[in-house]
Figure (cartoon, each protein chain N blue to C red):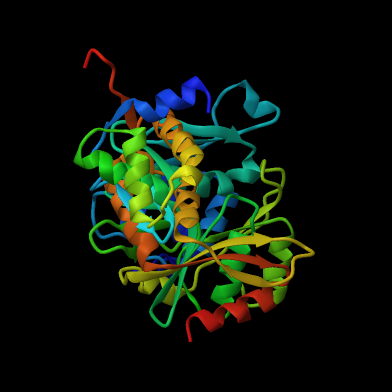
Length: 104
Length: 300
């Protein structure tokens, strides 16, 4: 894991939109509407877990990983680490979540 | 009173001297033109539409030949909306496609209280079928084939979805056919009434199929959206109806929507309700009759 990946997991993230009213989950497919920018994205059930957690309160990547592992009844989160990093970077690029800087 | 209750001479005199106003489902359209070939085509295609009894029209269209120097060489036709030109001018022989495409353009711009998709819509046994795809996928051909099999035409180009109840609102208009489809639909049923064919339109040769009178009479009867089909015609395709996931269906339907982005969050809510209540399929086909017969299984 590179330094950048590590930061993605250790930094805290917060949600930039109202997730509850702007998503639709069908089996393992998640459609997300970004009301701030008008974009619609197709994602997956991992994103649903992360965004639900962030709707509740800001979380670090590691916390999101832990929550997801618990939901999926996994003993280890190792296999989910890389997908979670990719997901957080993707959600950030889609302007759905933002890193909380030290100044906030 | 319907347009066909007027003689052609009465219709022609009136549309040249003043305007003809007709009711097309949700909208009232007013037309003025002096282009004789277009007048003949309009009389054929719109003969069964009711003349409007109102002085108000939602859309005022006027087709003219501009009186500039080009009228002497490579003459063109302009489509005016409220006396302002819309779309690019086209040669006189393309006046009908220009009118039909311009009318679509106008409708999309005034019906923002509905979600509008680029789609054909037909109905049988209370099942509303939305056929949505980019141009050239065989959407209109399939639509014309289904009409020939007894399905009711709601619209050939625009699926108009009511935000309140996710019902499909009819807007029956002539069905646009391109290139080989023109001959195919004529051969399918010699009773089909087609306009003259316009060549070199930018989309190839184009003709329009006259809608059935009963479908126009039923233009105020909406229907529940039940099935969304994403068709793909290919000359070597094996017939296949393949269930498509809801997420992918929603993303593809968004691509085929005219005003999803304009409606914002409301558009998202209508779209997800629409996809949620519909069965969604990819449909690959080669033979029109085989394809239309197969679709009967979805509604029986």
